[in-house]
Length: 305
Image 1 (cartoon, rainbow, N blue to C red):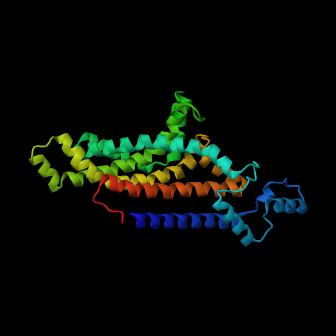
Image 2: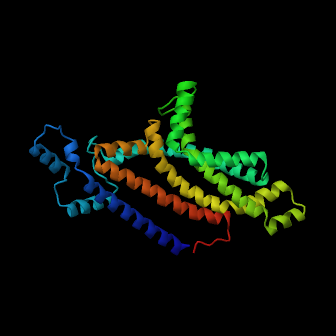
Image 3: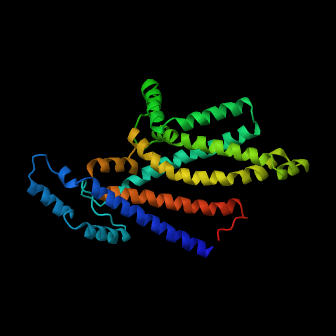
């Protein structure tokens, strides 16, 4: 266990190092933020003064080493646009993103597992066919299109829910549903296929032959063994929730780090972009690490070492 944890921590640090380096190099290759911070009539001297004030006139290697040293202290520098620490801006917006991702998770996981289990138990029934159609349809439609359609129907047409904003439970319903629908479809399809395989296994038939209650057979023998691949996809999709939230937050004007990232990209705000991407990468690697440990809780036969 100790060797496994050490190895995974080293892998995590390496991934974060590669992501941070890639973002640094890519940003320096695509544009000069100094030109965006001055008016079009500004002289070359004014642009050079802004570049010097931001430290962009230094050699690239010197900028990179300074960036990595400050990164070790979780100091991403000041935002070019807001003139505030980038970490402070992240702290202001990350709570909204976590809240949205958590709401989407609470909707998608129970719904996906329920639909998958019932579809497997009632195989080839009307419910199974309807759930399969909904899962395929939900997986096929883009989340941003679903969000726009929900705004048109529930906000503009029927005026049931607010189209944007943050702070009340009614404002999170549509973005959470739009973000979690695709994940629920994936979980439902995977749960159904795993349950069908497990329900046809020898130990399930043996449990039924011994007279065990059907509910006990489903929950203790079938569902528990079918959940391991589902946990894997949930862990991967939790990371995708953060990526998908970038689009959904823009559609619903949700004040999370996804919306902040889009604004920072438009403004060439290097420190905020670097901080946001780093935080999202941290979420990805932490979620994957936690998923590995959940394996052991579900199936004690697995040994991480």
